[in-house]
Image (cartoon, rainbow, N blue to C red):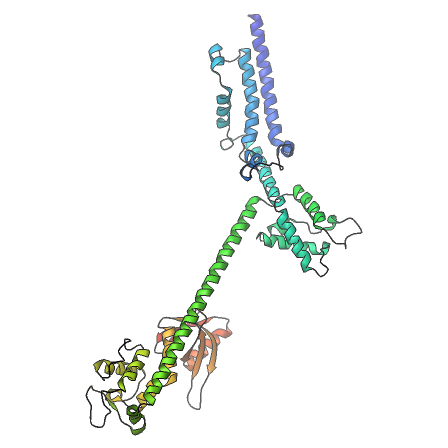
Length: 450
């Protein structure tokens, strides 16, 4: 028994010593990262998914905890072997894998709150730094392509130390790092060339040898930096494609609108000639005859039926007052009368209710009136347009000011405005504001400043 007691005491002393040694070993393991460089494997030939597995077990804390667990397992096995812990049944049932798994769960870095916590963070930071270095090393082909492109842009086709700051900036822009890479590089690149050779051309091999060594000695970038840059490039690419798509759609709308306008103008000019060449309408223009304000002929009026009515219907169609497809009807009816009255009232034609006289017919067939109608269709009520130019078209005692504007598609459009509004817009431009006008109908506009 004395021998057994002595063995037990000796074991306790050894266990205490081993526990102290284990704690010291853990402290050394986690506090001194000298072992880190021996563990990492940059030359791993595994598939891409597992190429950086060494960094994964370091970032997650698996490796440091596993080393501690193996040391603790050895100590526990020693206690079982000596009989200090458990009986024969316990030793028979003991499963080292289960014990180690339980140790890993109990000592998981996410739940550890002791001297190891800070050390785990340092190990994780070292792994993240190494991951960033690997990301830079793996971009060697990309850096070489950029280097060759930079060479081609120089006058002599070679890069020297003078070109290095600009080349580093180009790499920063290439990776969309917003200065994060450029700011971590040295202010001077003299170390790249031996003394006395500062003005000589730098080969890519010489640059990469220096660059690789510099990256390995410094914490330049993390992989997260490159991922953010990639996301930024993706967003910029998406926005560029969106702008290109919008530009294509805008031009398509412009072309469609121009085609419709051209077609409408051709139809108007053709219809206008039909009216001006028609003998019945010539009576209105030359002899002062009138198309009655009713639907039956009055004495001295032109006929309310005949081949002179279809072109009039066509004009009202072009002015969007009448549904298309009614030009075959050669009668002056209530529908045409309502179209005429609506059109004439909007243009403040005197005595329009008496019928279509020379003044009304001249305005109805006037090219300027129809162009103004097409413009009003384009701008529509509520449309917002940026002001580009203000023109003073005043003559004698008549004050007239015209705005040249553009719509959202860049199509030009003009508005007539009062002198007061023209002065307000001029003042806004002088103050650096961006004036817009919003159409209100009947060529009226309101001013918007932003």
